[in-house]
Image 1 (cartoon, helix red, strand yellow):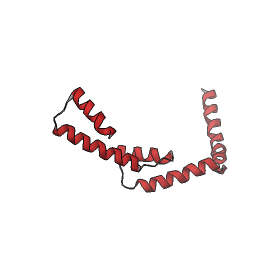
Image 2: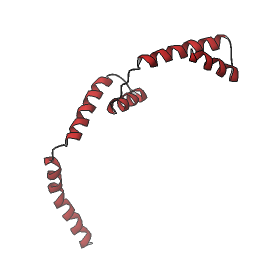
Image 3: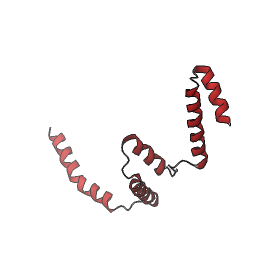
Image 4: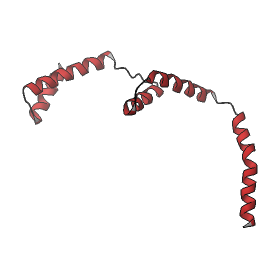
Length: 106
């Protein structure tokens, strides 16, 4: 029991010195860059919440753009149009897949 008490006292005595060492260390250049990136991404995230915010922050911190490119916007528009046409024609299963494939190619 005395040994346990002595170990606990020794651990508490060493804690302030350990904490002081941690406080005196300056962040590395990589850490400063990451902190800056985190701050900027957090500001750009604005009012996003939940999964939308997680997705945005992940892309932003990796340095990726979260805005769709012109090609992505064009593809999304084509997908929307083809999807509407397939629904209007009431296509299902393999027939729908085949139609979507040809429609999306141009």
